[in-house]
Image (cartoon, rainbow over all chains, first blue to last red; front, side, top):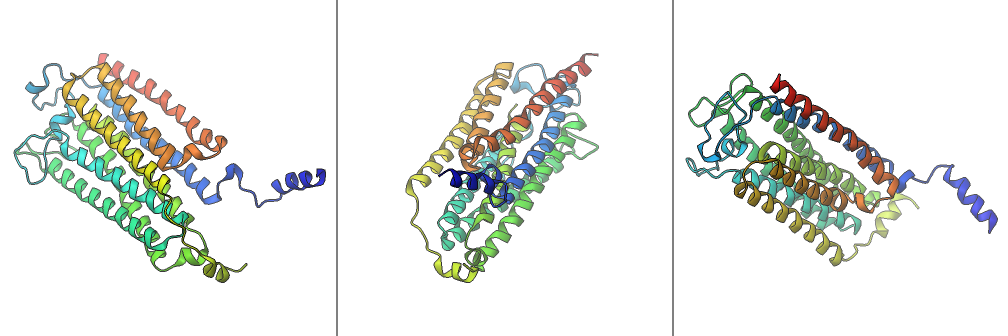
Length: 236
Length: 107
């Protein structure tokens, strides 16, 4: 008995045992996500700082008009919906985008579950839905950017001009949602690579579907970041 | 065992119904919390209380995504703390920069 215990302890130092009981790839993905979380925190916190350094709008929400003098109320800026021009539906479109991204996170986690069961057909199905969800989100974002840039006849917004309020508001909109959108785009590319390799049977030959899990972590992180962008850019 | 032998040994296991039910429950929680955020956004005036409610509900959503979808709640404790504790630096960053920012506005 004693010798068995000694061997076990010796083996821990001989390699072959993963620290924290996860594989190298998954652990590195986690630490990459920590660093990426710091990047997004930097962007969102600097948004908070610049916003706090501008005067807030005082007065009733219904009387709000766009002005360079104070920070805009986001729900007054983002109140448009495709094909319903002229209607004011505050935050409806961004709510839809949030729901699309949550759904694609669910289909991703179902793909991971199918991977555990080595069910190739199910992994293919759920990966495809995840890719479709990601592309739909990117399409929504393209529409929202177009609407924000063109504007409702008030000149719209760019990096140097902004009809909705201080120029910094438009700058942060482009940088934060743009940086998140870039992550969504690279997530879709990664998801597609995983889908392609599943279809061509690489993971069956390898004997496990762990790559689906690793890319799944990244995809959920993209969803997680959007939860924070939604709150701090659109709701607050 | 070579990888070729592995290929032949692959067996598709049946769907884990309880697990899928659990994941769908998490989805409904996330959707529900988002709906609650909307209700608060349109029924309450903008105030410190409202912002606190939003931050709290966001943390609830973040918890479910990280713990269940990303499975961190079911990993070993050392991994969980290695990921979560560094985020305390962000909490400090928020407090420091929002405070400094409001001072820029005053002076």
